[in-house]
Length: 450
Image (tube, rainbow, N blue to C red):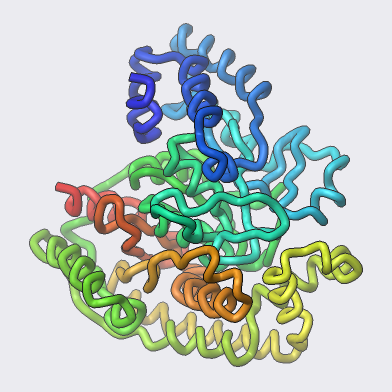
């Protein structure tokens, strides 16, 4: 019974809580026990345990449960929060020795999303591990301990930068977790753990109290076990309070056939095409299109430099230029790319990308959603990416698959197309159509697993 409960989705646990079949204190103790009994490589998904505060909040949730005044359907559910998010008395260290040195004695208040979550009875239990400064797509971090991929047998990259958020959900340390996504940092680890990762439209979830990487592109999003949990959790954190509605009969979906899909290995193409064939048997209006702008924007970034790198350097330079040797060398090299990018090139690059964005939005005159694989490769071995050249190759590869959603401000969700397998589907929609992306994804997920 104990193991069964911690393997459930947040919505299933919420049902047990609402029916008083389990109380929030016992529930919390089950997840704490899971953490205590976990192997070290799983515990490394967690950077800090907030047990004392979590138990206090669980007691309050239990009292509300007994008095029939629960604050939300997720009232009493333990959660993980990426360690770039400030929680009162627990400043975020961002997976960095340098940031810990700068912030360890800092008095911080709850980030806005923490306040919003607590107002609905959601219980922060863990700070989850991250790539240093949240600046990397593979999930490795030489500055602090980090967890390996929990789904793969062996030592494989967990995906980053929200590596601990995905690892902790997959390992049943918490049923849901929060991460940040600036160029794919939620979707990459979610994909490589067979989970659902959602990156919303910029600023639909508050970034107040979140350590920035690149403020123009930083988003806060969720890691969950299914789309329904993502929808419920997003609804709470964004304070949108929208109602789910079916979109299937009127939705026009375009399969992007010239980006990522051609790069899959043959067996994975077959798996993905089988998934697409299932959709063809339902009432969606599906067509295949080419979106050359996705490849063009990656070529611009490759030739001119990353906008994220530029913003990251100019935000953090006064803190890191004297102590850059304290930083993971892979992260430091990405900061230096931003340092070497001139203001002129930055603004020219931004102009080029904005022109491409206008072109992208012409596609949405005739379609509602884009669908494509999330990543073109399975997770590489950790020992392989310890080589600097291979790290750069793989990191650039995965980010080139996911950064398009951030650069064009498209809400994006990833969810697996096959159980216990890394291959995932992404659905992208127009900015501020987060509700529709979540709703159509829930329908597609249900079709895929029927």
